[in-house]
Image (tube, rainbow, N blue to C red; front, side):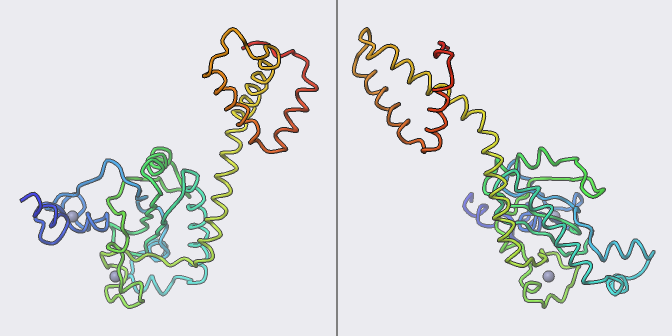
Length: 274
Ligand SMILES: [Zn+2]
Ligand SMILES: [Zn+2]
């Protein structure tokens, strides 16, 4: 029985859990759905609801009431694509501050329950959780960020294959994800930039720690020099520890060593005890 339930979970056969919410993270019935939307407490994926300003919806709002196809005709496609790529870059760099992104998908769907949705899949849950906590309720381009954990971790099941082959007959009102295509070269360069940013950020954050470690190492060296082999407690454990320290010191790069030896020369505090 349990096995059966696990197998049908989130499928059409499952009469309890909503297959759309389970697979796509969005269901057109939203809270009125007759089946359960099982919202995860944690996930490596966050959904930022309606964050992207879809150009067709913008045109509808500007031009008063009109049909979607009329609004589509009003959209300047070149400008819309340019705006989209700027949005994508912005969001990518903003989100990657929290950790490595495995996927960032902005949807092209027009249905009210999906329009403007942005899915960000991180390398791990903790990164997603940090992003959710920081971004929740913040504003981007005049829009409030409504962020939730999404059950979608495998986008192959969520994406509309027909859209990816430019042949979805349902158009913008399809209920599967129409993931807006992004040039691969842009993604690669964003990956590189964000990786560099993260490294720099970590480096800056750790600089203080490094200084403190350098000071500690310096004191240890001075202690060893001052007190010789510390005959009072010269047991084997102590020797091992000392060897380990020496080994660690040997591993530091030349620059590091030069810097600390310069300090040794100039510093005349005589290695005060901590
Ligand atoms: Zn549902
Ligand atoms: Zn479709």
